[in-house]
Image (cartoon, rainbow, N blue to C red; front, side, top):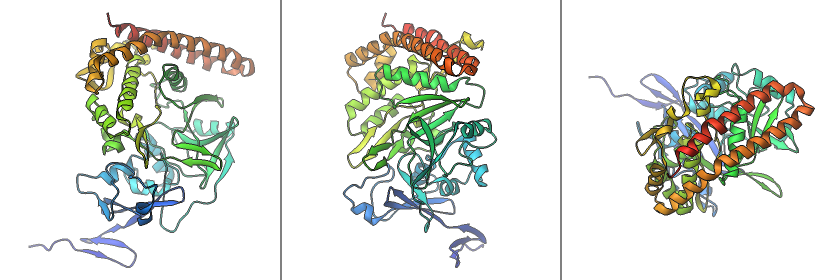
Amino acid sequence: MSRPPQRLHDAIGVTVLDGLHYPQRSLLASIGTQRVGTLSEYANLWKFTYAPAWLASADRFALAPGLPLQEGEIQDGASFRPVQWYFDNLLPEEAQRQLMAADAGIPGADAFALLSYYGAESAGSLTLLPPGKSLEAGGMAELSDAQLSARIRDLPHHSLAAGAAKRMSLAGAQHKLAVIERDGRLLQPIGAEPSTHILKPENTSGDYPHSVANEWFVMRLAARAGLDVPPVQRRYVPEPAFLIERFDRQRTATGVRRVHAIDACQLLGLDRSFKYQMGSVEALARIAALCRNKLATRFRLYRWLIFNVLTGNSDAHLKNLSFLVGPDGVNLAPHYDLLCTTCYDSRAYGSGKRPEHATLAWPILGVERFGEVNFAHLVQVGEAMGLPRKAAANLLELQRSAILDEAQQLLNQVDAENAQLLKHTPDLDATLAGEMRCLRAITHNVVKEMAERLSPR
Protein backbone atom coordinates (compact mmCIF):
# COMPACT_ATOMS: atom_id res chain seq x y z
CA MET A 1 0.00 0.00 0.00
CA SER A 2 1.56 3.29 -1.06
CA ARG A 3 2.05 6.06 1.45
CA PRO A 4 -0.02 9.28 1.10
CA PRO A 5 1.70 12.31 -0.44
CA GLN A 6 3.91 14.13 2.02
CA ARG A 7 3.89 17.93 2.05
CA LEU A 8 7.04 19.51 3.49
CA HIS A 9 8.53 23.01 3.45
CA ASP A 10 12.19 23.58 2.80
CA ALA A 11 14.30 26.57 3.77
CA ILE A 12 13.57 28.55 0.61
CA GLY A 13 9.78 28.45 0.89
CA VAL A 14 9.06 25.68 -1.60
CA THR A 15 6.35 23.08 -1.15
CA VAL A 16 7.58 19.52 -1.69
CA LEU A 17 4.82 17.13 -2.76
CA ASP A 18 5.79 13.56 -3.62
CA GLY A 19 9.19 14.74 -4.72
CA LEU A 20 7.81 17.59 -6.85
CA HIS A 21 8.76 21.14 -5.90
CA TYR A 22 6.05 23.81 -6.04
CA PRO A 23 7.22 27.36 -5.40
CA GLN A 24 5.04 29.23 -2.95
CA ARG A 25 4.31 32.60 -4.48
CA SER A 26 2.65 35.71 -3.16
CA LEU A 27 1.79 39.21 -4.33
CA LEU A 28 0.78 42.24 -2.30
CA ALA A 29 -2.39 43.92 -3.57
CA SER A 30 -2.72 47.67 -3.04
CA ILE A 31 -4.98 50.54 -4.07
CA GLY A 32 -2.85 53.66 -4.14
CA THR A 33 -0.77 53.58 -0.96
CA GLN A 34 -3.32 51.43 0.94
CA ARG A 35 -2.52 47.72 1.31
CA VAL A 36 -5.64 45.70 0.51
CA GLY A 37 -4.41 42.17 0.99
CA THR A 38 -2.14 39.33 -0.05
CA LEU A 39 -2.63 37.02 -3.01
CA SER A 40 -0.92 33.65 -2.68
CA GLU A 41 -0.59 30.49 -4.74
CA TYR A 42 0.94 27.07 -4.26
CA ALA A 43 0.37 23.80 -6.09
CA ASN A 44 -2.00 25.71 -8.42
CA LEU A 45 -4.39 26.64 -5.59
CA TRP A 46 -4.92 30.35 -5.00
CA LYS A 47 -5.97 32.20 -1.87
CA PHE A 48 -6.51 35.82 -0.89
CA THR A 49 -6.33 37.40 2.55
CA TYR A 50 -7.54 40.93 3.27
CA ALA A 51 -5.09 43.07 5.24
CA PRO A 52 -6.24 43.89 8.82
CA ALA A 53 -5.75 47.62 8.14
CA TRP A 54 -8.04 47.38 5.10
CA LEU A 55 -10.72 45.57 7.09
CA ALA A 56 -10.51 48.30 9.74
CA SER A 57 -10.62 51.19 7.25
CA ALA A 58 -13.75 53.33 6.96
CA ASP A 59 -13.25 53.23 3.17
CA ARG A 60 -13.08 49.44 2.94
CA PHE A 61 -15.03 47.44 0.37
CA ALA A 62 -14.91 43.92 -1.05
CA LEU A 63 -12.95 43.66 -4.30
CA ALA A 64 -15.84 41.63 -5.73
CA PRO A 65 -18.88 39.73 -4.39
CA GLY A 66 -16.92 36.48 -4.67
CA LEU A 67 -14.19 37.91 -2.41
CA PRO A 68 -16.27 39.10 0.58
CA LEU A 69 -14.70 41.14 3.37
CA GLN A 70 -13.61 38.70 6.06
CA GLU A 71 -10.76 37.86 8.36
CA GLY A 72 -8.65 34.90 7.33
CA GLU A 73 -8.08 33.30 3.96
CA ILE A 74 -10.45 33.01 1.02
CA GLN A 75 -9.24 29.68 -0.38
CA ASP A 76 -9.91 28.22 -3.82
CA GLY A 77 -10.99 24.62 -4.18
CA ALA A 78 -10.27 22.12 -6.92
CA SER A 79 -13.16 23.23 -9.14
CA PHE A 80 -14.63 26.36 -7.53
CA ARG A 81 -11.94 29.04 -7.82
CA PRO A 82 -13.26 32.54 -7.05
CA VAL A 83 -9.80 33.90 -6.21
CA GLN A 84 -8.06 32.69 -9.36
CA TRP A 85 -11.01 33.64 -11.57
CA TYR A 86 -11.11 37.18 -10.20
CA PHE A 87 -7.39 37.88 -10.60
CA ASP A 88 -7.02 36.02 -13.91
CA ASN A 89 -9.68 38.36 -15.31
CA LEU A 90 -7.18 41.22 -14.89
CA LEU A 91 -4.97 39.71 -17.60
CA PRO A 92 -5.34 39.93 -21.38
CA GLU A 93 -6.78 37.02 -23.32
CA GLU A 94 -5.98 34.85 -26.30
CA ALA A 95 -3.16 35.95 -28.61
CA GLN A 96 -2.52 39.12 -26.63
CA ARG A 97 -1.79 37.03 -23.51
CA GLN A 98 0.57 34.77 -25.43
CA LEU A 99 2.47 37.76 -26.85
CA MET A 100 2.87 39.37 -23.44
CA ALA A 101 3.95 36.04 -21.98
CA ALA A 102 6.55 35.62 -24.72
CA ASP A 103 7.84 39.17 -24.16
CA ALA A 104 8.26 38.36 -20.45
CA GLY A 105 9.69 34.87 -21.01
CA ILE A 106 6.80 33.35 -19.02
CA PRO A 107 4.53 30.43 -19.99
CA GLY A 108 1.17 31.79 -21.11
CA ALA A 109 -0.64 29.35 -18.83
CA ASP A 110 1.11 30.70 -15.71
CA ALA A 111 -1.37 33.43 -14.77
CA PHE A 112 0.24 34.08 -11.39
CA ALA A 113 3.64 34.75 -12.96
CA LEU A 114 2.04 37.10 -15.50
CA LEU A 115 0.35 39.02 -12.68
CA SER A 116 3.66 39.24 -10.87
CA TYR A 117 5.39 40.59 -13.98
CA TYR A 118 2.69 42.96 -15.26
CA GLY A 119 0.74 43.81 -12.10
CA ALA A 120 2.09 47.34 -11.61
CA GLU A 121 -0.70 48.73 -13.86
CA SER A 122 -3.86 46.73 -14.42
CA ALA A 123 -7.57 47.15 -15.06
CA GLY A 124 -9.17 49.08 -12.22
CA SER A 125 -7.33 50.21 -9.12
CA LEU A 126 -5.18 47.29 -8.03
CA THR A 127 -1.41 47.15 -8.17
CA LEU A 128 0.15 43.75 -7.56
CA LEU A 129 3.79 43.57 -6.49
CA PRO A 130 6.01 40.83 -5.02
CA PRO A 131 6.81 41.24 -1.30
CA GLY A 132 9.69 43.62 -0.72
CA LYS A 133 9.17 45.47 -3.99
CA SER A 134 7.57 48.87 -4.42
CA LEU A 135 6.74 51.14 -7.32
CA GLU A 136 9.29 53.79 -8.09
CA ALA A 137 8.24 57.41 -7.92
CA GLY A 138 5.68 58.39 -10.51
CA GLY A 139 6.76 60.00 -13.72
CA MET A 140 6.09 60.20 -17.44
CA ALA A 141 8.07 59.53 -20.60
CA GLU A 142 7.29 60.87 -24.06
CA LEU A 143 5.64 58.47 -26.50
CA SER A 144 6.28 59.97 -29.91
CA ASP A 145 4.26 59.16 -33.01
CA ALA A 146 7.35 57.49 -34.46
CA GLN A 147 7.75 55.26 -31.39
CA LEU A 148 4.09 54.30 -31.39
CA SER A 149 4.15 53.67 -35.13
CA ALA A 150 7.12 51.32 -34.71
CA ARG A 151 5.31 49.36 -32.01
CA ILE A 152 2.16 49.06 -34.09
CA ARG A 153 4.15 47.84 -37.09
CA ASP A 154 5.84 45.26 -34.84
CA LEU A 155 2.48 43.64 -34.10
CA PRO A 156 1.75 40.77 -33.84
CA HIS A 157 5.35 39.71 -33.29
CA HIS A 158 5.60 41.63 -30.02
CA SER A 159 2.96 43.09 -27.75
CA LEU A 160 2.14 46.79 -27.91
CA ALA A 161 3.55 47.17 -24.39
CA ALA A 162 6.94 45.70 -25.33
CA GLY A 163 9.59 48.27 -24.52
CA ALA A 164 7.19 50.40 -22.47
CA ALA A 165 8.60 52.25 -19.49
CA LYS A 166 6.22 50.36 -17.21
CA ARG A 167 4.95 46.78 -17.25
CA MET A 168 1.18 46.89 -17.69
CA SER A 169 -1.69 44.42 -17.96
CA LEU A 170 -5.05 45.26 -19.51
CA ALA A 171 -7.86 42.74 -19.79
CA GLY A 172 -9.36 41.79 -23.14
CA ALA A 173 -8.44 40.05 -26.37
CA GLN A 174 -7.33 43.08 -28.41
CA HIS A 175 -3.90 44.69 -28.45
CA LYS A 176 -3.91 47.78 -26.26
CA LEU A 177 -1.64 50.09 -24.35
CA ALA A 178 -2.20 52.17 -21.22
CA VAL A 179 -1.03 55.75 -21.80
CA ILE A 180 -1.36 59.28 -20.49
CA GLU A 181 -2.91 61.92 -22.75
CA ARG A 182 -2.02 65.49 -21.91
CA ASP A 183 -2.68 68.49 -24.13
CA GLY A 184 -2.78 66.29 -27.22
CA ARG A 185 0.51 64.53 -26.40
CA LEU A 186 0.87 60.86 -25.53
CA LEU A 187 3.03 59.90 -22.57
CA GLN A 188 3.99 56.61 -20.97
CA PRO A 189 3.39 56.21 -17.21
CA ILE A 190 6.42 55.38 -15.08
CA GLY A 191 6.37 53.84 -11.62
CA ALA A 192 3.41 54.90 -9.49
CA GLU A 193 2.00 57.28 -12.13
CA PRO A 194 -1.48 56.08 -13.24
CA SER A 195 -2.42 55.98 -16.90
CA THR A 196 -5.39 58.05 -18.05
CA HIS A 197 -6.28 56.52 -21.42
CA ILE A 198 -6.24 53.21 -23.27
CA LEU A 199 -4.97 53.07 -26.84
CA LYS A 200 -5.88 50.41 -29.40
CA PRO A 201 -4.49 50.05 -32.94
CA GLU A 202 -6.25 48.36 -35.84
CA ASN A 203 -7.28 44.74 -35.32
CA THR A 204 -4.38 42.64 -36.60
CA SER A 205 -6.45 39.61 -37.68
CA GLY A 206 -7.54 41.16 -40.98
CA ASP A 207 -11.14 40.10 -40.33
CA TYR A 208 -12.20 43.54 -39.09
CA PRO A 209 -10.72 46.21 -41.39
CA HIS A 210 -10.78 49.78 -40.12
CA SER A 211 -11.68 48.63 -36.59
CA VAL A 212 -10.32 51.91 -35.17
CA ALA A 213 -12.74 54.06 -37.18
CA ASN A 214 -15.52 51.55 -36.56
CA GLU A 215 -15.24 51.71 -32.76
CA TRP A 216 -14.62 55.47 -32.74
CA PHE A 217 -17.76 56.06 -34.85
CA VAL A 218 -20.01 53.68 -32.89
CA MET A 219 -18.85 55.08 -29.55
CA ARG A 220 -19.66 58.61 -30.75
CA LEU A 221 -23.01 57.36 -32.00
CA ALA A 222 -23.67 55.85 -28.57
CA ALA A 223 -23.09 59.24 -26.95
CA ARG A 224 -25.56 60.84 -29.36
CA ALA A 225 -28.06 58.07 -28.54
CA GLY A 226 -27.87 58.92 -24.84
CA LEU A 227 -25.64 56.12 -23.57
CA ASP A 228 -23.05 56.92 -20.93
CA VAL A 229 -19.68 56.51 -22.68
CA PRO A 230 -16.21 58.00 -22.08
CA PRO A 231 -14.70 60.54 -24.49
CA VAL A 232 -12.93 58.92 -27.45
CA GLN A 233 -10.42 60.09 -30.06
CA ARG A 234 -8.79 58.80 -33.22
CA ARG A 235 -5.13 59.43 -34.01
CA TYR A 236 -2.91 58.72 -37.00
CA VAL A 237 0.81 58.07 -36.47
CA PRO A 238 0.28 57.50 -39.45
CA GLU A 239 -1.30 54.12 -38.52
CA PRO A 240 -4.77 54.66 -37.02
CA ALA A 241 -5.14 54.39 -33.25
CA PHE A 242 -8.25 54.55 -31.06
CA LEU A 243 -7.94 56.39 -27.75
CA ILE A 244 -10.48 56.19 -24.93
CA GLU A 245 -10.43 57.96 -21.58
CA ARG A 246 -10.30 55.55 -18.64
CA PHE A 247 -13.45 55.61 -16.50
CA ASP A 248 -11.52 53.94 -13.66
CA ARG A 249 -9.46 57.09 -13.13
CA GLN A 250 -10.49 60.26 -11.32
CA ARG A 251 -8.75 63.59 -11.71
CA THR A 252 -8.18 65.41 -8.41
CA ALA A 253 -6.43 68.60 -7.36
CA THR A 254 -3.30 66.57 -6.61
CA GLY A 255 -3.27 64.31 -9.66
CA VAL A 256 -5.02 61.20 -10.93
CA ARG A 257 -6.57 58.66 -8.58
CA ARG A 258 -7.27 55.01 -9.42
CA VAL A 259 -10.90 53.89 -9.00
CA HIS A 260 -11.72 50.24 -8.37
CA ALA A 261 -13.49 48.61 -11.31
CA ILE A 262 -14.53 45.06 -12.13
CA ASP A 263 -16.12 43.49 -15.19
CA ALA A 264 -19.30 41.40 -15.25
CA CYS A 265 -17.37 38.12 -15.10
CA GLN A 266 -15.73 39.30 -11.89
CA LEU A 267 -19.05 40.62 -10.56
CA LEU A 268 -20.74 37.25 -11.16
CA GLY A 269 -17.74 35.20 -10.03
CA LEU A 270 -17.09 33.63 -13.44
CA ASP A 271 -13.96 32.48 -15.20
CA ARG A 272 -13.13 34.60 -18.28
CA SER A 273 -13.90 31.63 -20.56
CA PHE A 274 -17.62 32.04 -19.76
CA LYS A 275 -17.90 35.60 -21.09
CA TYR A 276 -20.11 34.48 -24.00
CA GLN A 277 -21.56 31.25 -22.64
CA MET A 278 -23.05 32.80 -19.49
CA GLY A 279 -24.41 35.91 -21.20
CA SER A 280 -28.22 36.06 -21.03
CA VAL A 281 -31.13 38.31 -20.18
CA GLU A 282 -31.22 36.52 -16.83
CA ALA A 283 -27.56 37.42 -16.27
CA LEU A 284 -28.36 41.09 -16.92
CA ALA A 285 -31.14 40.89 -14.32
CA ARG A 286 -28.72 39.34 -11.80
CA ILE A 287 -26.18 42.06 -12.56
CA ALA A 288 -28.73 44.81 -11.91
CA ALA A 289 -29.69 43.14 -8.62
CA LEU A 290 -26.08 43.42 -7.44
CA CYS A 291 -25.88 47.16 -8.18
CA ARG A 292 -26.68 49.97 -5.77
CA ASN A 293 -29.32 51.65 -7.94
CA LYS A 294 -31.14 48.62 -9.28
CA LEU A 295 -33.89 50.29 -11.32
CA ALA A 296 -31.57 52.78 -13.03
CA THR A 297 -29.15 49.95 -13.81
CA ARG A 298 -31.93 47.89 -15.43
CA PHE A 299 -32.78 50.80 -17.72
CA ARG A 300 -29.13 51.42 -18.60
CA LEU A 301 -28.48 47.75 -19.37
CA TYR A 302 -31.63 47.60 -21.49
CA ARG A 303 -30.51 50.66 -23.48
CA TRP A 304 -27.09 49.03 -23.94
CA LEU A 305 -28.69 45.84 -25.25
CA ILE A 306 -30.97 47.75 -27.66
CA PHE A 307 -28.04 49.79 -28.97
CA ASN A 308 -25.95 46.66 -29.59
CA VAL A 309 -28.80 45.13 -31.60
CA LEU A 310 -29.35 48.32 -33.62
CA THR A 311 -25.63 48.66 -34.41
CA GLY A 312 -24.99 44.98 -35.14
CA ASN A 313 -22.54 44.29 -32.32
CA SER A 314 -22.07 40.53 -31.95
CA ASP A 315 -19.23 41.00 -29.46
CA ALA A 316 -21.30 42.33 -26.53
CA HIS A 317 -20.06 39.75 -24.01
CA LEU A 318 -19.86 39.91 -20.21
CA LYS A 319 -16.33 41.33 -20.10
CA ASN A 320 -17.63 44.32 -22.05
CA LEU A 321 -19.64 45.49 -19.05
CA SER A 322 -17.81 47.05 -16.12
CA PHE A 323 -18.69 48.37 -12.69
CA LEU A 324 -17.19 50.90 -10.31
CA VAL A 325 -16.88 49.58 -6.76
CA GLY A 326 -16.47 51.52 -3.54
CA PRO A 327 -17.75 51.82 0.02
CA ASP A 328 -21.15 52.90 -1.36
CA GLY A 329 -21.53 49.66 -3.35
CA VAL A 330 -21.47 48.65 -7.02
CA ASN A 331 -22.37 51.05 -9.85
CA LEU A 332 -22.52 50.37 -13.58
CA ALA A 333 -19.59 52.06 -15.33
CA PRO A 334 -19.72 53.94 -18.64
CA HIS A 335 -19.94 51.66 -21.68
CA TYR A 336 -16.99 50.78 -23.92
CA ASP A 337 -15.97 48.34 -26.69
CA LEU A 338 -19.01 49.31 -28.75
CA LEU A 339 -18.55 48.58 -32.44
CA CYS A 340 -20.39 47.13 -35.41
CA THR A 341 -19.25 43.61 -36.30
CA THR A 342 -22.01 42.74 -38.76
CA CYS A 343 -21.00 45.43 -41.25
CA TYR A 344 -18.30 43.00 -42.39
CA ASP A 345 -21.09 40.63 -43.47
CA SER A 346 -22.63 43.34 -45.66
CA ARG A 347 -22.50 43.93 -49.41
CA ALA A 348 -19.85 46.59 -48.83
CA TYR A 349 -17.30 43.87 -48.04
CA GLY A 350 -18.48 41.31 -50.59
CA SER A 351 -18.68 38.56 -48.01
CA GLY A 352 -21.64 36.80 -49.61
CA LYS A 353 -23.40 37.00 -46.25
CA ARG A 354 -25.94 39.40 -44.83
CA PRO A 355 -25.81 41.24 -41.48
CA GLU A 356 -29.17 39.85 -40.37
CA HIS A 357 -27.79 36.31 -40.61
CA ALA A 358 -25.03 37.06 -38.10
CA THR A 359 -25.36 35.51 -34.66
CA LEU A 360 -25.86 37.59 -31.53
CA ALA A 361 -23.18 37.55 -28.82
CA TRP A 362 -25.53 35.26 -26.85
CA PRO A 363 -29.12 34.10 -27.40
CA ILE A 364 -31.70 36.67 -26.29
CA LEU A 365 -34.72 34.77 -24.94
CA GLY A 366 -34.07 31.97 -27.44
CA VAL A 367 -33.34 34.21 -30.44
CA GLU A 368 -29.86 33.68 -31.90
CA ARG A 369 -29.62 35.87 -35.02
CA PHE A 370 -30.01 39.59 -35.59
CA GLY A 371 -32.63 39.01 -38.28
CA GLU A 372 -34.87 37.15 -35.82
CA VAL A 373 -35.11 40.05 -33.36
CA ASN A 374 -38.22 42.24 -33.57
CA PHE A 375 -39.95 44.96 -31.56
CA ALA A 376 -42.22 42.65 -29.54
CA HIS A 377 -39.30 40.40 -28.70
CA LEU A 378 -37.18 43.24 -27.32
CA VAL A 379 -40.12 44.51 -25.25
CA GLN A 380 -40.30 41.02 -23.72
CA VAL A 381 -36.59 41.31 -22.97
CA GLY A 382 -37.23 44.54 -21.08
CA GLU A 383 -39.99 42.87 -19.07
CA ALA A 384 -37.71 39.92 -18.28
CA MET A 385 -35.17 42.41 -16.94
CA GLY A 386 -37.78 43.80 -14.56
CA LEU A 387 -38.95 46.87 -16.50
CA PRO A 388 -42.62 47.82 -16.92
CA ARG A 389 -43.85 46.80 -20.38
CA LYS A 390 -44.88 50.32 -21.40
CA ALA A 391 -41.58 51.82 -20.24
CA ALA A 392 -39.62 49.18 -22.19
CA ALA A 393 -41.66 49.79 -25.35
CA ASN A 394 -41.31 53.57 -25.10
CA LEU A 395 -37.55 53.40 -24.54
CA LEU A 396 -37.09 50.97 -27.44
CA GLU A 397 -39.09 53.13 -29.85
CA LEU A 398 -37.36 56.32 -28.73
CA GLN A 399 -33.94 54.80 -29.39
CA ARG A 400 -34.94 53.01 -32.60
CA SER A 401 -36.66 55.99 -34.23
CA ALA A 402 -33.76 58.38 -33.66
CA ILE A 403 -30.69 56.30 -34.38
CA LEU A 404 -30.64 56.44 -38.19
CA ASP A 405 -30.83 60.24 -38.29
CA GLU A 406 -28.12 60.43 -35.62
CA ALA A 407 -25.90 58.03 -37.57
CA GLN A 408 -26.35 59.98 -40.82
CA GLN A 409 -25.61 63.30 -39.12
CA LEU A 410 -22.50 61.82 -37.53
CA LEU A 411 -21.40 60.35 -40.87
CA ASN A 412 -21.70 63.80 -42.47
CA GLN A 413 -19.74 65.32 -39.59
CA VAL A 414 -16.93 62.78 -39.97
CA ASP A 415 -16.81 63.46 -43.72
CA ALA A 416 -16.32 67.18 -42.97
CA GLU A 417 -13.68 66.41 -40.33
CA ASN A 418 -11.82 64.23 -42.84
CA ALA A 419 -11.78 67.05 -45.39
CA GLN A 420 -10.03 69.28 -42.86
CA LEU A 421 -7.66 66.47 -41.86
CA LEU A 422 -6.62 65.90 -45.48
CA LYS A 423 -5.59 69.53 -45.84
CA HIS A 424 -2.80 68.90 -43.32
CA THR A 425 -2.09 65.19 -43.97
CA PRO A 426 -2.90 64.36 -47.61
CA ASP A 427 -1.09 61.02 -47.29
CA LEU A 428 -4.09 59.75 -45.29
CA ASP A 429 -6.33 59.87 -48.36
CA ALA A 430 -6.49 56.10 -48.94
CA THR A 431 -6.86 55.34 -45.22
CA LEU A 432 -9.73 57.78 -44.75
CA ALA A 433 -11.47 56.56 -47.90
CA GLY A 434 -11.41 53.00 -46.58
CA GLU A 435 -12.69 54.16 -43.21
CA MET A 436 -15.60 56.05 -44.77
CA ARG A 437 -16.55 52.91 -46.68
CA CYS A 438 -16.77 51.10 -43.35
CA LEU A 439 -18.80 53.87 -41.71
CA ARG A 440 -21.24 54.02 -44.63
CA ALA A 441 -21.71 50.25 -44.34
CA ILE A 442 -22.48 50.66 -40.64
CA THR A 443 -25.00 53.42 -41.32
CA HIS A 444 -26.78 52.14 -44.43
CA ASN A 445 -26.32 48.35 -44.34
CA VAL A 446 -26.71 47.76 -40.61
CA VAL A 447 -28.27 50.64 -38.65
CA LYS A 448 -30.84 51.49 -41.35
CA GLU A 449 -31.91 47.86 -41.81
CA MET A 450 -32.04 47.08 -38.07
CA ALA A 451 -34.01 50.26 -37.31
CA GLU A 452 -36.58 49.23 -39.93
CA ARG A 453 -36.64 45.63 -38.68
CA LEU A 454 -37.38 46.77 -35.12
CA SER A 455 -40.29 49.01 -36.14
CA PRO A 456 -43.40 48.37 -33.98
CA ARG A 457 -45.58 47.89 -37.08
